[in-house]
Image (cartoon, rainbow, N blue to C red):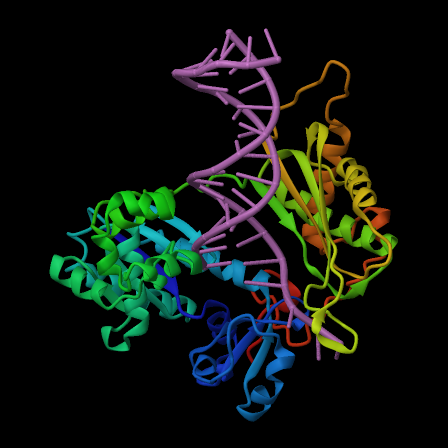
Length: 429
DNA sequence: TCTGGGGTCCTAGGACCC
DNA sequence: TCTGGGGTCCTAGGACCC
């Protein structure tokens, strides 16, 4: 039996956890540069027009009218709260798979003696997390990960279930699936749901009995795995040790558009610095770097609201002469890539860098004609990371990062980093 | 250069996730 | 004025091998 524990409106709930005056009020959290809505409280969801991903300027009227509270995304706080949530779950069962910042799968077999029932376990988890972290979560139980996902969703949608839903009998499963929209299933996106509807499949129950050959052909093996999981046959296992990432990316948009290659290069070196920090943190070296650059896809030709302005999108990948993880070494290739794709006559909205082709950090190869990784630079980078962790991001940085056009990022409604900075610790008056 | 059955590896792009 | 930022997996098709 699997359980899926998923926090309700996680970012909003974390904000409330540290600022109880927000409780009961409509609340939204906005992303980078205070632009788009990336989380909503139940009260905000209930207001027509407050949708995920909408830019805040489009709904300013609704925000004023309904006195919606706004917070800037505080990922430091959310990340730390997430770690606390996960370690709490580990007190209930040994096998926990952290699936995302706010959800985890648990393998709950073998704990029958400790709890009167699965729903008893679910209740205990809910109450503990509420008490210790002041966060509301829902718990779904099922014989496969997919059924646990379904159960979790039902627990969220039906308050009368008290936040816990157990799908442990064929009757419970088929009656749940009979009213469950296929497009809400884990792994069914826009495209697949259109194809399913075209052959008359509306519910998860109907998908269960679609012919395997059709599913495999139209939805690939992922669709087939989904169908088996709905039938109660596990095709996804619990993955406790999260594997290291295979790619690392940083590509925040500019606050405004930028025409100047020098400014873009400065931003790019900041993005690269972020990527390399993450790379070193997971003890990897990267072999390939990709740089991309694009214009604002929403921009219209002046005076012609119907006509998109001329767009430009380009990317370039470069294989490094040897795998490395230091910003200083990789930067010249990043700038070389940028130079090769930069075009005059456009204003750019976003540049980004993707690192890939990783090898473990203890891997050191020396090519016949090329030098190996620069050990001194790698050691130096480790020291820089430690100092920056202690004294704040970018306190030590490359000279090319000196002029960051996005500094400071607009975060007008930012809460404190209560749990990770001594100078921002929660004060009780 | 063509013939053909049998493979592997790599990459771009699609689809999906939170 | 203003439109998110990360990731994963799979497949088809090309290039190449014997």
